[in-house]
Length: 510
Image 1 (spheres, rainbow, N blue to C red):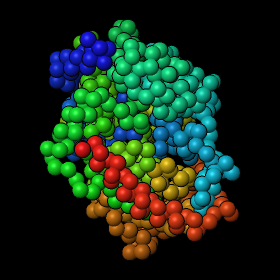
Image 2 (image 1 turned 60 degrees about the horizontal axis):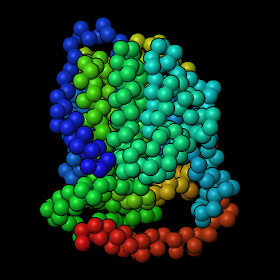
Image 3 (image 1 turned 45 degrees about the vertical axis):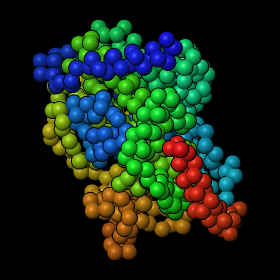
Image 4 (image 1 turned 180 degrees about the vertical axis):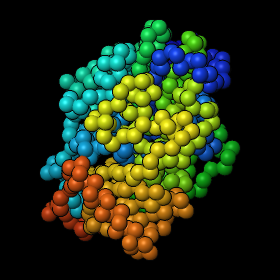
């Protein structure tokens, strides 16, 4: 039997024997709460079965979502990874931290593309002057653990430098250097048997930590490298989903061109679907271990993603419809995420909230759940969601985003405010504004800026105040810009690249 076969058999047994989720009674509140934070890379909200996907199979994630509260208006604080991750760790918006793009991206005068503006400078690591969530938990007596993707700095700014007692796999890289099967080539994670799944390995490392520290309170942060590129799966899973896609009837066209790049419109990529199943199995392994050890009734599980699904650029892996766009883009597909909190004894199973919430809110929510005094000067942009988890409410507020960069997936330098159901996007290239009513136009198809100029002006004014208050870095005009060359580049994306993608993804089904 091969190492890979052993992994899959073990995984199958763990999932098949998994008991249903159950809410704890109030008596469990006498025990300290443990925390398992599950962060997935590049997972779109619509990649999950409970959110509407019928192609990907996510029964364990669906079960987790149904065990607590599902926030249907849950957001990451940025359309790319490092800024969102920094917000979770510090409880601040990216603009305030200074990490506004993925760490390692070209910025300022180092920008070599032909674009209208120079992307703003970007901080290269998580600042030590801040108290990270892990540091706060460690100070309160929690054993802290990190597994997987970090991407918040290099030497001197690894997870162990920001409050985590144990680090399995977190280093400066944003994608797995050796891919998703061993050998991993990861300086912070020993290779497993050849062909071992990285995703399942990270779940195994997490369960080993939980079992070892079951008699003390713990904070485990499981940060999957999946489902980031390179998209990879086993032959068995690829064949399974190829057959499934054929059985549903293959789409004649999978892509449209949306402003700057082609965008995937159909969920039928069998390789990505295989990655999704492995991810779901890994989540099931962790939740099953909590039940086996009798810890499920006093362990809070949080599940979310750092940005939207990759519908443009990279592997063009998924579709976020009915949300527009995806990772790197300023529309809902780039920032709206699965956002689940299962708090036994506090939140009723199958609870749903439509209150807009974001990545900065995790920090104060976790502190308050743990009975740790809040740190308002630290998590300045976050709000504790405990009242919502208890069925109450929080004051209405606006949410903000600031991305003064060009996304590899076609995103444009912009700043965003969501106020109620209104969403305004301000573009730095030409100063234009787009205004959408998300209640009636979740796909952001109809720009209402001209129809409602007073609303647009009011939101733009509020956005300007926020940008100034946070010290947001603003991109500057690039005098090297060649508009004719840009037209040719866009035309290439609209014609040749679009056709290349259609032909390339059709090969899976030949």
